[in-house]
Length: 255
Image (cartoon, rainbow, N blue to C red; front, side):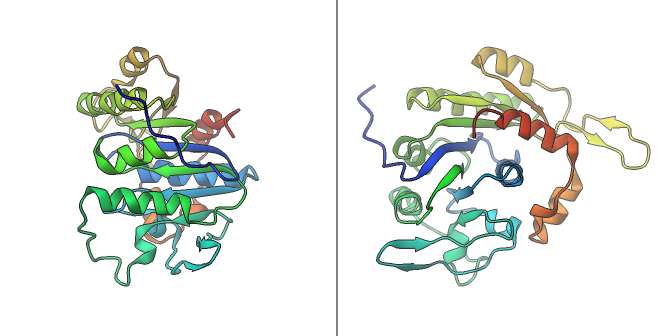
């Protein structure tokens, strides 16, 4: 493989972590949002770069609709109720429901503008919410932004593990260290009787993490409250000790 191009300057950002999967529908944006909330609750200065240009959802999770304004020094990112800085394509659209129909080079250019031209200021950690796949947009983000690690998000199904392996291989090729694996939607706990059900079958994450040689952060249950709060723009109000315990333990020593 030819030498990789130089990374962008990391500015005043201590740690930059990508959150991705390769596969859609595993809850990457949910995990990214909850990671940011967990870090903010620890008193950290946090930002989220929504690199999913054609399918952005981060602003909705946090109830953001403020149009970013800029000056000669750069673009001011909107800030959530708990101080998390966010930049996303949905914040730039007059109608968030309108599609962004762009080819690969434009997607990559937007991601780099979000990183290079936004005034992130001093941050302890910036989470980059990646789109599905391993094509242009993901490649640009992983190749050009000085990532300190890549957190892989999977779900119990074997097909999810298969696609996640592709994302892990891409990260290795681009010399981005793997941060670990978190399994989302691992089970559903009945609110009435407490019975735990594996809705998507048995987990394949043990074999995945063993093959990749990375840490398994843990599994996150399927909680309808996440969707309810996210739809209402109130993800920062979410409370679930089981889920936050997994994320906080995974972040130990990394921010």
